[in-house]
Image 1 (cartoon, rainbow, N blue to C red):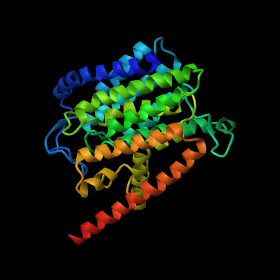
Image 2 (cartoon, rainbow, N blue to C red; image 1 turned 30 degrees about the vertical axis):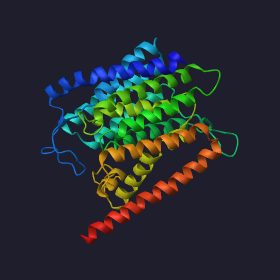
Image 3 (tube, rainbow, N blue to C red; image 1 turned 135 degrees about the horizontal axis):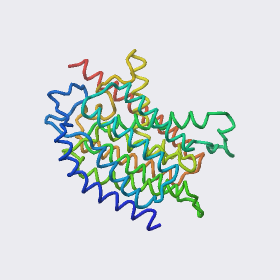
Image 4 (cartoon, rainbow, N blue to C red; image 1 turned 90 degrees about the horizontal axis):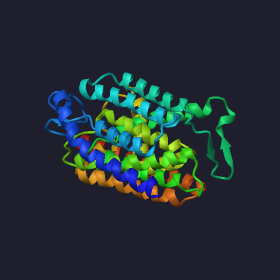
Length: 345
């Protein structure tokens, strides 16, 4: 366990702590800066220029730790890190030039296809009422579900970096929970071992980055951080399907993402259209600070992740239903409240 949990976590943490200040030198020279005076985006909160490109130190931390603890490479690790590298490069181009969201989306699909081509698919899910549902009985269904899941997680977590420190905390907690569940069986196969080690590397890298991203942020994750979201989505399905666990631990950003897509479609706008209607924006409009909102997301992720560790499959189903009712209802109420406040001004 020492070489599976502690060392990968510590090594990736230390590497990111060292790599982030060094990356900032490189990032500033390339001009990968989010300047609120030049970057016209309705959701911008900062008043001064802040470097983007946080995906660089995050990915470096995981890759170097992976070279140490996941050696020798195999088909799975090569595919995962290659897909992550593609997501990183395109993300950096967006951090610098603000490229088309459709190009970004196509890249997400390509990255997911590379991962799935290595055999990382959701081949079965546990039936909450007993038994196993084998998805591979229907041709291409495991691949399709896996691609949709990976792309969804990449976009959903990208929407959850609106306030400083919000995203790294969510990713770290989610990775720790998934990593612990990867070790739940006494006999660990190779995919589970890769999933566990990679999960704790992601957690360590995210917490190392959090030091520089917590309010006031010295660096933003940028779209390049989708490389880490892809890795997190991958470990959530690697070895065995842990989708219910991932849905729970990422429950709050998950519900916010669902409401975001539904809201934009119902208003006739593209799902890639930018706005200031995410949950963190609604909380900001009610007077919550950026630090308080980040802590709110972390707390909910930790609570839901703890439940995921102890609940049965049936318990997870009921927890997800309650999550939809409580968080979904809360988001709807906040939308109503903020709209009412806007019309009364």
